Length: 236
Image (cartoon, rainbow, N blue to C red):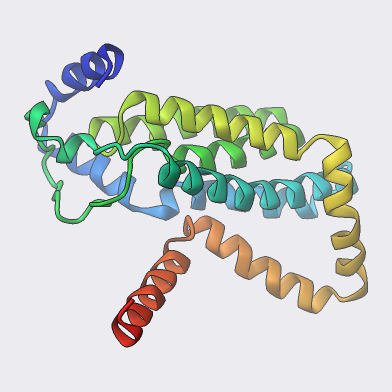
């Protein structure tokens, strides 16, 4: 544990259990995907159909969607390959005071906290919006910082460096994926397919955007259930 993380976690934790309403509000926000990526996804749909520079906006949206997949895979790979990092709520040496409404048995037990895949994911979305609309993008970055990332430190789900590194990864992947030399290669074929077969494209796009708004929680739950099934059936 580095001094930077320890000092911030200990300081923030001094405010825990001071307000029943505040603690429960942060627990609710942190556990509600509609108030996380679900807030940002309608902006992508609105910008998709907005008249101003529509072709370029659609290129950025598709590039951002692909960047999200790349970011999640990269974050999970780092979490698996790097040394395991116990979340603050499970680190007995911290004597972490749980905010009202938190239950340690429920939150990501057995998952390494570094880096924060939430931060990676949400900052990729924010960067994508920034490329299309500066006003919306700035709002998204502020919202991601104060309403999605920061509460996870207060609730003991992440250390500050988990969030900072995750945010930097997300910003870098979001920025790279939206550069013209990558964006064009990804978006041009897909936009061509969207024009030739809009019914199938928009059906798939809705499904993908729904999963993004849901932070892929249902997809991960299905994969976890499949893994458990294979383990039980084949004794792996």
